[in-house]
Image (cartoon, rainbow, N blue to C red):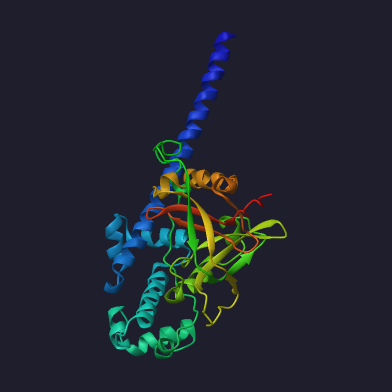
Length: 334
């Protein structure tokens, strides 16, 4: 009987280990392919003016052109040819908007056979000519640089544990943000970033925002997101700030709101490794932000007049949550 118990325990343990190693192998393969495709995407960006070919890209990551093409399509959701064409047109579009280079020179620089070829691509994508766009830049849906390597791909590479790097505790400071307008999409039924993008077209929305980066506020920059309150319910918004005197075009599907200048408590963590530590850092910062007593610094929340902002630039400034505050009224002396 004892032998049967030992044998059963061994079989159960073996089955568990076998399952563990199979899952771990699948996770590692997933990570490796997303990492390989991300390297291809980064290489395309670095060589966009050199008319990058599939053969060149396959040499960079050590797989056959056919396998690279198949995996790219599966992970990114489009062919390499379509992706490169979109990024070339975006690069040309930004050069037309932001420089005084001749349109012919821009066309040749980004791999078009002639100015007419660029104009045809421009008209097909945006419904206007490059010259008309240069005279009057308007909101358009640019083709975004894709990101396919995320923290959840890193989990399971090596050990099924999060990174053991020692992180700092979240901290808080006070920051003043001048009066500004915010152009964005407010969704009271989305509580955070993930929920928001399940309800909205990420590529189109971010492409439009990128096309308006030249008018963005220097403090509330492009892709600054955050939270707002409506009937005591917290929703999520995404967009960008513009100067308070902005009176230009508002993209379709967006709206504009005015916000006064004011102070914010900034809950922050310094730069960190995005793939390894993102979840832990965000948890630390948000736990502090949503449970903080502002009276300890002489403030009270001011979320009726202003909205909460979120800055997420992991390896540049780190992660920040900004909650608006105003000074507590002075006690009346008797």
